[in-house]
Image (tube, rainbow, N blue to C red):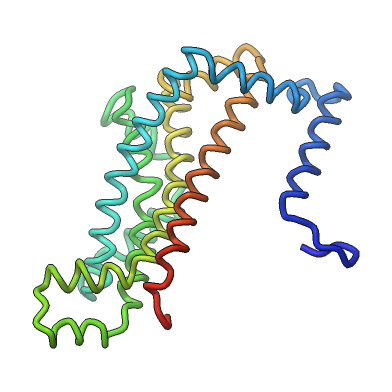
Length: 250
């Protein structure tokens, strides 16, 4: 970003918003927004408590389980849709419906089906993440050059070798892009699921802090969650850049 002829780092906008947050908090104009410095101090103290650590383990467990199933199922369905026009026609409309639908409205239904516990949160993470992984995997598979497939067949590659060593790696950049977007949506899913269930993990803490107007810990928890989501996204993006050469001329 260039401002008045000078190159300004992208982080500068974040620092500006941090300063504004601090000034608004210090002014006392909005009691719901404490000073950022107090929030940071609260965050450091919060991560040292057994309550936060227990909630973080519960939330992480639900998130990892949901993402595991979302990645496995999403890649499998995406490959199927990318290689089969029949499967693409049958499943495409449903995938697009779930990508566009407000999935938060389904959480109460999931609570009826799976109860008020961790299973509902895992299924919520799965539903939030799987569809974007399906679409990106499908796009990656459909973008594999036919010449690569023909080359593998001409050298006598078995179907497992063809998919595992040629098609999968050729589509890998798009698959990783889908996983990166799925992780962000999965974080959203785990928070929404736990908020609506409101008896486990981060949802329990958010409910506790908001009910007691403990805004320092409320915003501290929010910042920790945002930082975790951004960190996971950046990690997958770095892996994505490392394997970008698999895309070749595409």
